[in-house]
Length: 230
Image (cartoon, rainbow, N blue to C red; front, side):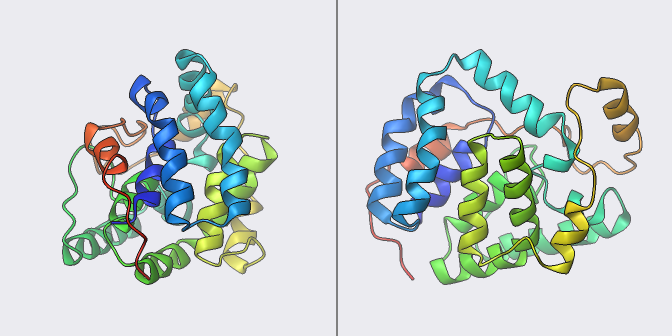
């Protein structure tokens, strides 16, 4: 098990009290496994500090503004490529088959392409295989990292680290096309309502909800620390 991916999955979930309490252990995991470089770990520290010291309601409000009200920052990865087209359904089926082939059962209402769910799957795989899957999603990860950096949010460091693990860059053709899209204004509720009304396909009870921190994720973070296998 690669607990670094469990830790990053937890950090990208809707903030809860349990997550705040787990920040010291997350620091230990990131440093102990050394899946991330020292520079990447240092870049994540501002997010860890904010998670640990900020009021939980402020954290939750900031999360909603970023990931729930900004479609261009959606953590549902296929949305950036397929939108709500039928192609997204086929991609979902393929991803579910990848999960099942890897012995991973998707539980809960989150979509298969929700980034925290993907990271939970990657935590069960060999590091080389995990890097390959991150490379597949690389252009999206690189774009999300750049968009988050524009908003000067510490979440950008998590996406940048994942893009680096997948050896992704924001200067590819796919990434350039995505970056050409205008960023959403999370305060423009009328415009956001119009965008979301265009959605035609629903794959889960609440595809726009941030994933909840589950005791399962935190239990994996608390598991005995072992070096990540290559």
